Length: 169
Ligand SMILES: [Zn+2]
Image 1 (tube, rainbow, N blue to C red):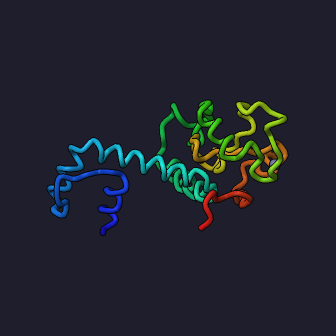
Image 2: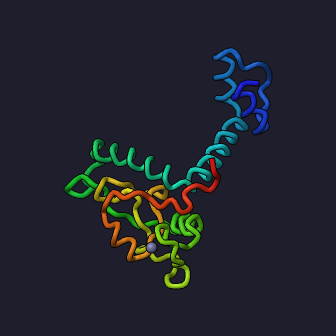
Image 3: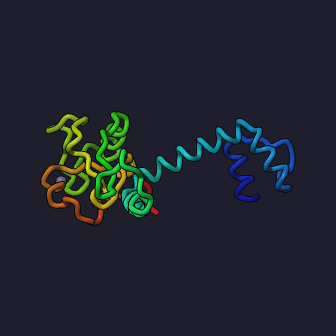
């Protein structure tokens, strides 16, 4: 069974017949709502797994930073140095990061739940700093306490390995 066939079976996508012909497959995927829903479901699942792997997120955001530096995103979005302006972190993103990081500073594991409101934006650190062309994106944020944030500053330091991966490989 091919990977495509396994994907279709697991996600209850039932093609009308064989999809070995490229035109038939293309026509099926263009018309099937269930196929598109399945793609959305697997995208959500992959994001859920990768969102817990901050080592991966750091590597991913370094690639994004290279693009941001190269792409020149325009005056409305960037500083004179070409870096992205800081933007407000949406509430849903703050809650997601707080939940993922268990309310703890990712570097020293000090609980931040008792001393700050979880909506306090000052504890949300850009993994790849804006000064290094990092993005204002939920994948580029982590919880850090104030002392750890000061040590990190805008430096390019490794992310903590304390609970980098939710699922051991
Ligand atoms: Zn800390």
